[in-house]
Image (cartoon, rainbow, N blue to C red; front, side, top):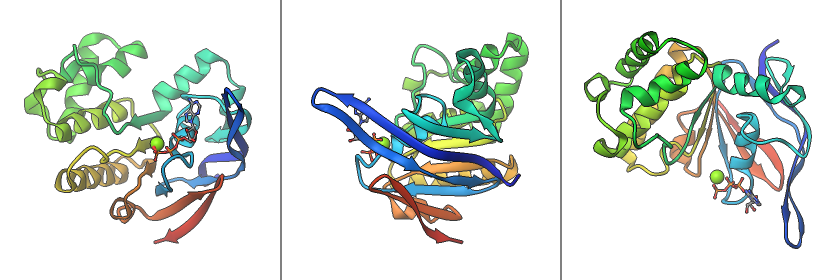
Length: 228
Ligand SMILES: Nc1ncnc2c1ncn2[C@@H]1O[C@H](COP(=O)(O)OP(=O)(O)OP(=O)(O)O)[C@@H](O)[C@H]1O
Ligand SMILES: [Mg+2]
């Protein structure tokens, strides 16, 4: 099977005071193994909603998501938490690091959650922090490092459990272009080195140029715009 991720008639509605808001109702999408894919589209079209479903952070109203052929939302909560922890790495626009903990602790957490002993977790976290060139900042807290560095910590945290799927929601949206470009180059290099399949949500066409496919989300559907 060459697809890591597939959806089947995916539907997401949000309840609003005046009734249901339908973001998409029959969305069908495939992500091929090894793809580095950009998803673009105007604000409010549903990019984050979709990424949150792919990341098992939310559940669809109807339809299915298959990750490596497994029907993710047919699983119970414990199994879903395990899929999130082991198979998926998530990067957010605003990093979402834990401010009370050091860089090393932030990156160790996903390993502790899966039951790895603290010393070993810290050893592995340190190795990944080296890959994002932060071995000199491991004992600092997020508030003591720059935005670009915080995003590199978030990348290390996303990758420490060796996921198959990397999901990034506007990973450079909060950074100047020079820093953002360096972050994208790092994501692209790690994507290649770790044989990931990745989706980057972005408003920015320059970001999409780092990817080998670009989809645009419009009126509840994803259309393939370009394929390198
Ligand atoms: N928790 C929620 N409850 C109700 N409506 C929501 C919720 N989250 C998102 N929406 C609505 O769903 C639609 C899609 O939102 P979403 O955040 O997915 O858009 P987006 O494409 O990521 O936008 P942006 O580019 O601004 O981040 C919007 O109309 C938004 O207002
Ligand atoms: Mg969004």
